Amino acid sequence: LNERAPPDSSIPCTMDKELDSKYYAHDEAKIEELLRSQPWKENPKNFSKCKISALAAMRMLKHTLRGVEKGKARDEGKGLPLEVMGLMVGRPQDDTIVVLDTLPLPCDGFESEWDVNIGDKAMMHMTNISEQMEKKGQKERIVGWYHSHPFEVGVHNNCFMSAIDVNTQSMYQKAITKHWTAVVVDPLRCVAKSKLEMAAFRAYPDDFRPPADQAPDGESISENKGKNWGTYPEKYYQLQTNFFMSSIARSTMELFSKDSLWIRILSNSQIDDEEFAGKVVKRIGKCTNKISTATADPRLYDKGSSSKDRSAGKGDSSKIAHLLCKEQTLGLLRKLLFQGCGCQKKTPVKAIGGNK
Image 1 (cartoon, rainbow, N blue to C red):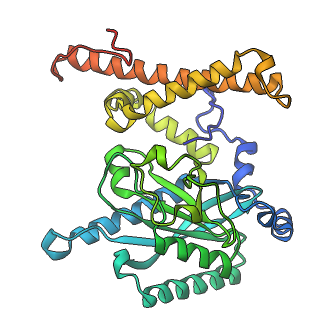
Image 2 (cartoon, rainbow, N blue to C red; image 1 turned 90 degrees about the vertical axis):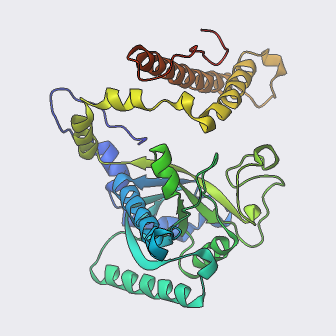
Image 3 (cartoon, one colour; image 1 turned 180 degrees about the vertical axis):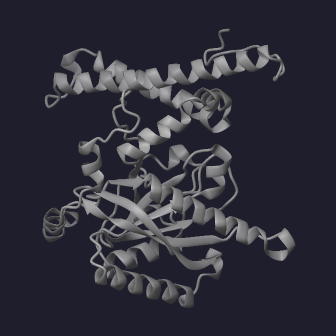
């Protein structure tokens, strides 16, 4: 989880009002002003971030895993995992979609089986739920939908929008609300990698065309050929997705995990992960480029650049270098620890560069 409340050793559970109000305080006037100004007309990618609460993420994961279990139980235990869908409750906030909770829908199956009846059933449930929320005077509203892609675990996650997904998302953005957002969950990869694998997406307007060869995440499609972005990667974009929880919930979790956190860290080593290892070289190259740019002769910069830009470049490269060093240190420590206790066959322990 990305938002961290300041630790307090003297009080078991502390409240950070600034952090909590950032995501949990509801400002109706500010939301109405945002909807009235319609900034997405000027910038199709106005909503560039999606903040998902720990509660919403947990409920989405549990629902999608139930779909996996239900599907596998079919055909005498030989069935395939089922895709499921549900609704997200929250609000738009400046350039961010804040997701506070979720509502599972009784709709599951395979994408190939998706037909008009299932679509109508989902729309009927959405309409009924929205009406009930308004009657109860609930401040938060439905801000989008989520569904699962329980496909085979590979090098890349299965968080993308299929042709049907893109058409559905585009229809919802036009018919329901302009800030409607989609989240795709990869439940099998969540289990395999022991981390949340979900991503948020929005459809572009019909008349908008992104730069050629640009993937929904902003990277080059040709340089990342292994990643599946579906049939129409030029029709949608990915939002920066992060997770948060209230300060009291975080303090409670830290209290519960304090004594066993070192076990979790040492039992999971990223440098043993094939996917992670493939990205290390790319991250080092990115870090090197940032350092080279930040330390270059100022005369080589564009006229619009400033010392502040160069300082930011140095800061970014320092963060990348720090993370790389920490990951390698923990990985090597884990290998040495397990070899020392005889839990793992002794092999030469090498870092990235091959030095012992």
